Length: 410
Image (cartoon, rainbow, N blue to C red; front, side, top):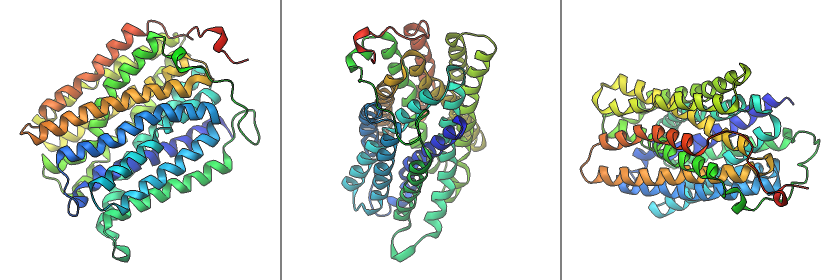
């Protein structure tokens, strides 16, 4: 199997994860017919997912470094698919929160696993393109989610079970199907049957002693705060502020995610093109990051434009965000050896999830206390610029960091 086939295989897993996490935001209107959910409660449910997602980003990354990519990815995919299906049995907010917590536990290992796959299979010059293909799964999952979930809600009423419950059962089953594919065909490079024995893990304190680590974590905290707000609140914004129904949401909410998929490929492709043109890794990554961040402030205009332009501006933001995200996720592979990448990617993901919790809670509070979406969109539109400035200040040069010799594998 070629390395590019591997990239598409992992991209499919990321697509499933984004399909799964969009189930609640899109089906929220139907769920509210049975279970009362205010804006603050919705923010609580989003935070329940993000808290365990962020914590298990670290735990999942460490799991990848200990168990190896094949075994680790298989375990987490089975877990999160069952957690997604469990939403369909919920009878109240507490049960929904428990399912969101479990979904976060499982999905937290997804991107650390993806980052390890890139470090294992791809040379430096191709890593950004590979991560772009993998990260494009976020857009594919987001494109599939609105029309698929709307179709299930409108048409699936099997066995007298509410249609919104079938949303979770069906999407959970898709994840389990992917695990069969993964178990059958994935093997790490240089191995025909199993993962090679992993090297001795590097202590976390060694990885956290570098300002570059904290700079990337902080940048992810800022930028993912905006991203999770867009992803989790776009359907509700269309329902509440623009008068959409579930059919209308299904018809247009996929468009920004299609732009996100293009952004993944564009951001990674631009960085790789600059490398092939002779620029250094430092220059290639930062030019692409800066251009991506420059696209984000336009989202501040959303409350002031007609509906067609709302979709255009959100599409621009989704494009810029996922171009940015592809590049930020590749930075650990530029700074650290491959046997530590899962752990470092886990710390970075934890930072992003915590950012999503903070902005999500703020959004829920403001919306339930008489504020419009305008102040939240102003905050969200400024965060990528702040994140880029933080990277410039803390990651002066993108080159391998000097891990102390006693922590290097023997």
